[in-house]
Image (cartoon, rainbow over all chains, first blue to last red; front, side, top):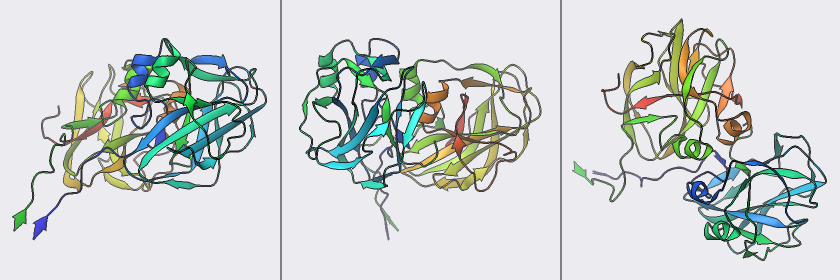
Length: 179
Length: 179
């Protein structure tokens, strides 16, 4: 009788944030130029993407972003595959609740193992999001970040452009309903 | 019996796997940049849950936590599955020994991996102190932590609620040498 152990790997994080190993991970420590703080969204309708690399499937049950001290207009959070095909999105959602984690509940979606991008967009430049300032946009691009102009709401498919923002927003996805 | 050992080119699990280790929230806490410190338990009978990302099957031998400068009353520690059912619970244990790791021997049990688990700790009073990190009230949610009140001794199953800003130093051990 052969005993074959399953392959060893770190399961995906329960809540995938920018600091999670599936996203920017410890690279965030090298790219950020300060502590996370509220900052106005840099360009109306711009979607900023962070990579999400999954070594095994997950079910996305909730999505979230962290609002700053000023809320305004609407937010769209999307997840797309490496080719830019939308896998889930919140649709236009009013930004509500200052200095707190705002949670949205799109239909549960299973993401298989592979590379994805999570994207966040605001339809104005008054609303603020908690974000890490980066030393420069090039470092963000070097971590795999991307962006898309005129992406509110998210188009399907998304056309990725090189990241031109030194702005790392705090947002993500959750495998748990309550967090 | 024929055996196929080992899984090639993988890092074995940590010998002590805890909330602040690399298979806990270690890298995320490094990015947040807040160090652990001594603090009183925040609410009597509150249980705190923190995700553990076990990358391979291992034999759990003990549970442990780090006491602060005052000990009082009783502690319970445990390991839960992602579905909130317990794998093992220490049961009510008198807190003993200031500013040291305290261990609790439990019946040896094989913990299957790769899988997500939660290390849990509860205390029955707010006089006893432990080493803990306070990463921030929004951050603890984004780290995948959870809590349950009126949860001493640790319940079966747990009912996860949104986390509070208190992450104790505690965990599980795959070796007998702990404290």
